[in-house]
Length: 107
Length: 115
Image (cartoon, rainbow over all chains, first blue to last red; front, top):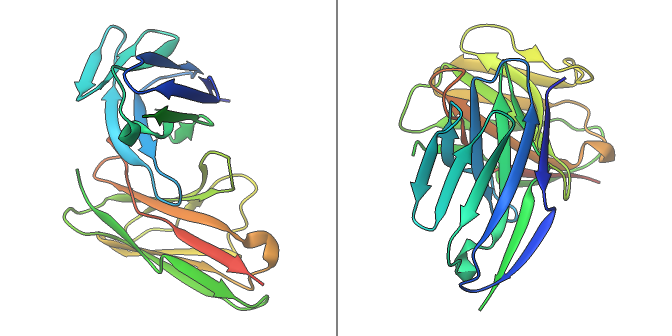
């Protein structure tokens, strides 16, 4: 069965303190890896799709990278509005989510 | 990104009643829609996949007679929780995609509380 493991579970950052979130996966046939942001009480908001090892995508202070076994979401100089739970998901025939990393950025 | 809406956003019902949740893709035609359930501090768990005009495919452990899914058009899917019980209380989220391996766009979720 596909497995997606995210670490750490929680991350507390000072504003401007860059860091990375990890998503490791085991899937028989990876057809895509997705990153989402979820705010409390809301549905996930799409951030990135990565399809092949070596691929990178950026959006504002976020950058996602992919290897054959894992993906990283780098947050550069975070701001308090970047506080959220970040979810990683992989798809073969269905989307399987990790448990998420809850990021709190303090001003 | 594409916009997906859900209605209602919040519902409280008595045990034994049925509740219907609507999911609409507002600015694109969704060939496939998905229904997820999320318990507090847990990730999303896929309940079922539905394609327009055909029967939904349910994940293992999800009762199809309890969670009725109808995907009547390319922009609307409904989830009906029949004879709801307190253990059905959860956050239900739908998503829609134009292709099964494409990005899924999620609705804002529906908080169901069964008393």
